Length: 451
Figure 1 (tube, rainbow, N blue to C red):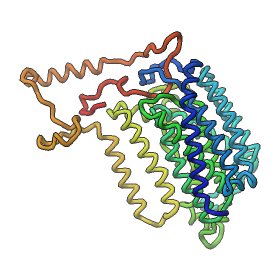
Figure 2: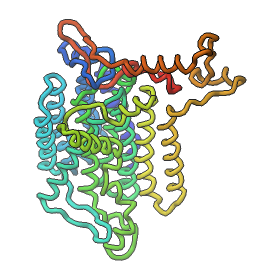
Figure 3: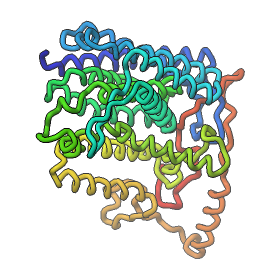
């Protein structure tokens, strides 16, 4: 089999193009069908925004699989494996459930049951975890029930993790695209570098997933013209989980043969190589952490784990004082650091430079997180070269007499501002569910930042 980089790139571009071109008509359809739910108290967008963007993403997935089936270097994936058909079956089911939820707001338990059924459909068609490498033990073969339960759990967790993080314009699509890019590099390395064709389906899935996200992002970046909704967030979560399951379930760790010795010694020594196999959720560690924190927070407060609130990580970034765009970029940064850091460590685990680089970038990320807590001011001579937020404000003579009183009055007025749902739309057409403009939040100028 020849080097299929160009075929993967073509598949990615076709998927992105179909998704991008269909998003506009889908937006008009969503408006006409009334798929613009009422703005809720936890939302911060101001304008009614349609969802159902997952429709365009699903057809992009279908187009990517169709093109790959007719390419010489990728056709064998469909001939030797039933995984693409399993993915399409599960994706179609979860997509239908998402579309119904975007339009009619179905119950959370029904969605959870649908997610489990979609995972079961993929398991029936062969997309399941067969074995896992355990450090110090070796490769542990799973029974049929163990593999099924583990597969269903992985699919449900990944879908809900991506769904939970879908709260800001462009956040979920961008983070999943970053995760897919890192996973693509890892799966392609296993397939092409080690000649293990069982990793080819996962490589194809991640390439198509990148195309779906890249095609949708131009319409979804702040200010978003359309939201992907549950039909999109659950879909891309399922595709990402399918890629991880495909690698874990079909690639035999013994086929890598990186280290000599017994199976136990080889598995223990090759632990960095198996990290993405054992812990595929590290690729989306930020969404998973947000999911776990949300469950603990809601349970502690006596609420249902499925009850929505404004305590997600991206909400807290806005409360700290970050603008909408900067909060999204910070989440991108941490996702890329974790995803590509794990992949880099799995390739060169003996290199201390990788560990030091990850630590240094983590320090940079912490500084970016805490940046609104500081109010840096540039010298007078440099004010013309820096953004307005870093310039010293001119003080009027009447304000100089009582600066503390004026500040306290402004602060009290700002703190008294509360968010109220916007009565948007005409004839019962209301807003959307994701997060939009930051101006809905209290102004943070007192902290030295600007939207």
